[in-house]
Image 1: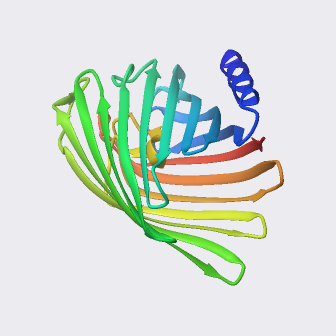
Image 2: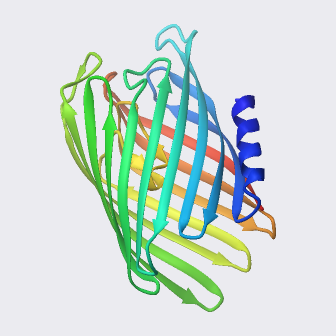
Length: 281
């Protein structure tokens, strides 16, 4: 982790301008999970804008404490590392293309060594109104996942409040039969999401909620993947923070409820609270 942070800092400071470096740290808690109790998530990244090019690099390390379902004694800890690369190229005022990549290292899950590839396009019909389409391919050892994202967004202003409303649809298709010893009972998912973001006098906030079941989902424009066999049903996210001249400070909270598929464990809650610190240069 220290080597990754050091390399990221050197890379970011070497780009001189139009970039940032960020640290995100959070805690996780689980309710009704078969083995998961609580954990931590930490990530470090940098992004850079040069003319029409935008690049983002991110490294995330998650740790989850686990216990035996009957004896309640501690068992092997879950450790996950993810490397993410995002690239966007602005062709003109109306059109932008993008690509993404995620590499997964997991000490317990069958999706260890998984890779996620993404391609997408964003088109603005007019100022503040646009749409995007993204295609993701998750490559795992015993199965693949194809995901298709379609969204439409509209920006608007109320007084001094700048806002953006997004409607998102995700189509997820599992290509394969098994996740280790678990045989998939359902392979096709369709989920929708509503997002609202706003800013006022340097303050920023956001709300998001998902409707419909989903599994092995790619989130955040190809920057995040949920690679465990967890069928999520309800998801709520919110964030609030302040943008200063050279840095941002943003707090986030997410709640997810679903089913652990291999364990056949229903009504599992996952809660994550995190703080993001971003320095702009």
